[in-house]
Image 1 (cartoon, rainbow, N blue to C red):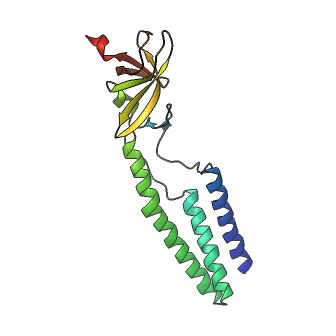
Image 2 (image 1 turned 90 degrees about the vertical axis):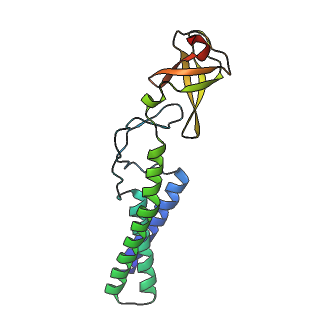
Length: 187
């Protein structure tokens, strides 16, 4: 049984190291939110209701496997009863995984969801042109939502040029392009 614990522990450690180095690319089990990526990737396209935060995420599964294997290795090293080792390893692994889920994953997911804004809520907001919008072309605007600053590609609603530093109003967002009009054009 010691070999099984060693294998489980090594699988958990190796997975953790690989995902740390790659940056969490294997976390494909995102449930409960359809993220609409814009230039900064911060707009949540699904503003209606909160999603389910699944405890079956790779991080909780791997923490369970790693702790289970590690406790099993320690127990067999001290030659404890195999049943006691298994039950203890299972209980501690479940406790650690639950704690990680309850006190890390759930709060972080909720914090991320509360800062998300739908594109419809951006219509009518003021923004600043940070790179000039050229005739029949594009530029970049900057706007602030919930204290965070975002940038987005922009075009004048009439395809006119807009100088850098001008304040604009967001009139529409189509295909992640923000259509704007300067405040002084509204008079």
